[in-house]
Image (cartoon, rainbow, N blue to C red; front, top):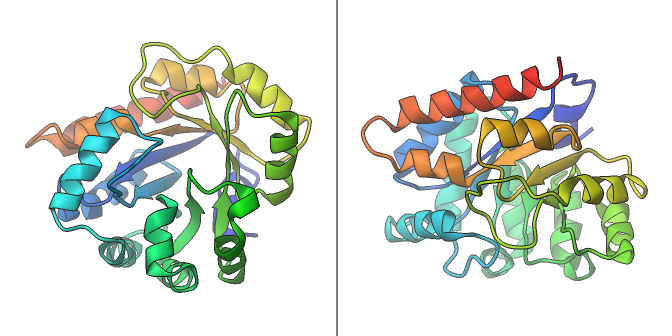
Length: 262
């Protein structure tokens, strides 16, 4: 069983996945944030590798990525950060990035070093499964789950393809658009989850636009895990007391997920 799959195995609670941008607001903050999130009950952390053209991300994560790049954060620095985090915690880690940084690094070398650094899987939004050849092959070789995304406008054929090639979990994009804080949970998530469950028994996790404990609890009615990013990244950039703000928010998310199952 893969590291990511083990998060869901036999778990009664819904899984809480947190996204943070590596190197934002500083690399030291990244190293501090993961153990902090773990202490609040977060089950898995996505480390975002910054990229200059983050087409799936909204303004919050775009700005965080821009600042991270200005801080000199590279894929190599993210790999080293993962190694340092792994010395502090066994919490499962994912890399979320785009295909260009992986291609530039070399898929074989990137996957090998990611596995050595303690990464359990990869999310690459702009890499469709039909074109994932070299990355998928090397991810498999190094026991990395390559996690694919499905959106409300995904066809049944696309759902079938993703279901056949999914590793770890299937990432449901709760809305047609980019990441970011939203006032309401997308009403299309329930229908999307039901469609995907006809094709796969893999765990389903929902992200994009889940911004509050209430939205997380509602999403958990339909899926096995909830992914929250922009609201956490916002708080990490909030200044001197970001640790307090992130901890309070992450704990409130976890409590909402637990309460939703009572």
